[in-house]
Length: 255
Image (cartoon, rainbow, N blue to C red):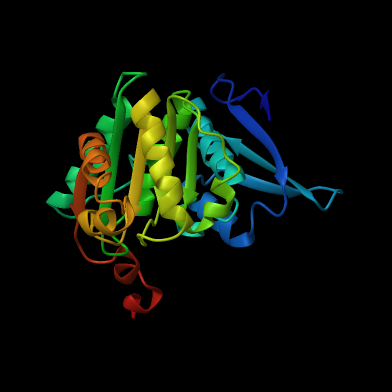
């Protein structure tokens, strides 16, 4: 990552230009189109090495830092859906009270100033209401604040198994929809680790929180009350409602 500065002859100011070499496979045509919509001054240059492209962005330092964070997140999560590449907390637009609550509590989780507290949000609701948007935004904000912030889809639990659980980590688990399987197993490990050593946990699901935990968290009837109590003490549970944003913005709606 390199930043170059050139003189603006008309204003006397020195506009900053960020140059960012990245793997060509990371920024598809669709991804670049999304970036370009958010960062109009973004340009792409093909390199002699077909495996690398050069992205350049002229603009304020704040905008360049946002772009750096977007690119760092994408490099960690190359399979991220294009629609969430530029998702942030500040560009999530709530449409009802539950979505306002979601955004408010997400910011409170980010702002929580404690290295020992186990704190989490569990967000459940229908598809298309912005759960993943907020999950990505929370991860990016925690990354900027120095957390070891790990975003992962629950279905990718095999990748979870190779990740080390350290104290005071942040885990963002997206689409934990089934009470069974490896995703739930890893979720339990994350929760217990955060409970014992501190950390942040943010979970999204299409399944009701209480149903998910009742059927999947602990099956031993003697152990269940203890673990359920720990979990309820850690998580703020938010049921988010609303119409699907994807349906509202579907291409055929413009006709």
